[in-house]
Length: 263
Image (cartoon, rainbow, N blue to C red):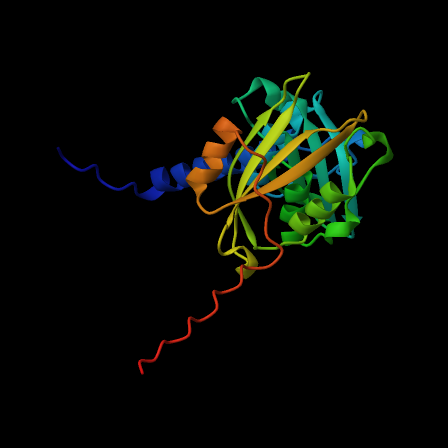
């Protein structure tokens, strides 16, 4: 097949001009179409801003704009150009079974340009959402539940202490698997983590089970420790014994056996 000759002269200039105009038109459409309206209920503080790039624009459309009737703000922290937020997204109920329903959001505004960048992720537990935001610069304890989110509270001190450990754990825990079962009568969230701490070396797989508390709007989380991932899964399927409790310190090494000397 013959190769076409390269454009030359006026034809080349015309082609270049048309391509430039198309790029300009796309950019103008991008800017005009994606200016964010006032979303006061969500506390995004983006009125008059537009996404700084197409990735942020797509993230905003897919994670926020399309879910506006279903997302509810639980916690927020604003620090200069950055905003850190956690939302409950009830629309996840109708998506892939077991999907996480907490949406963590990190916004960074460029005020001089009236643009913003956006990063989001769905996570199963409040503490894991806090940890993700902490890795992006949000002090873990700066994110506190808002007054209107009083239906999302830990039921006891043990749950609060576990959540604090998770939220401030940095890279200690690796999220391996999770499932959100949002049945109205008996909701449950299960999370499987790998714990890299030395204290957990003998049983590094941690299974977290979140259930509804006795009081309205509360929940409890319990933690089990397992030597293998499969052992954690087997417990989850069978639940024939209580969750194996994590050790507070590694098991002591066996005492050396005294050598027997012959006579």
